Image (cartoon, rainbow, N blue to C red):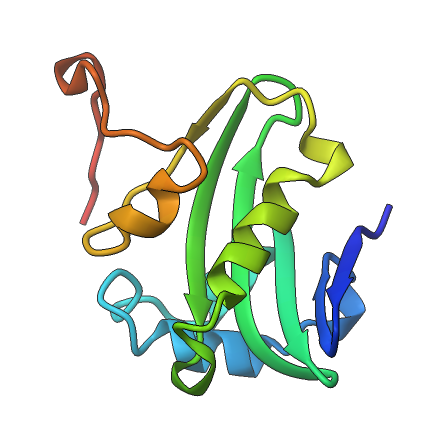
Length: 141
C-alpha cells in the first residue's frame, strides 16, 4: 500500500517507483552518519525498510526510512532534507507524515539516534532514553 500526504506543492510518498536512489545515496554520503556507506549498502537498506521520499513539484528534496516489525517497534533513520529546503517546516511535514502513516499506527516504541536535531524530534514527543544502560549494541567493523 502506497502512502502519500500532500501540502501545497510538497508530496511525501512511500511509492518506491518515485525514489531516486542515486540522489538519496549522494545526499546521505555527505552526512556524518552515512559517509562510510556505499551506494549498494544504502540501496539495500532502503529496499529493506519503509522508505519515504519528500518531493517539491516532483523533484526529490528529502528522505527518511523506518525499520520496523509493523507491530511494536520502529527505528527512524536517515532523515534528511537538502539545504535549500531546510528551516521552513519541511522537516515537521516529513515527520508528521511518517508518524501518521496508517501502516505504522500501532507502533508503541519509536527510536532514533541524532547528534544535532533533538529540538525537531522533541516536538513530536521523542525524549532521551530514561535508562540508556539498558540498551546494548554489537558493532562490527
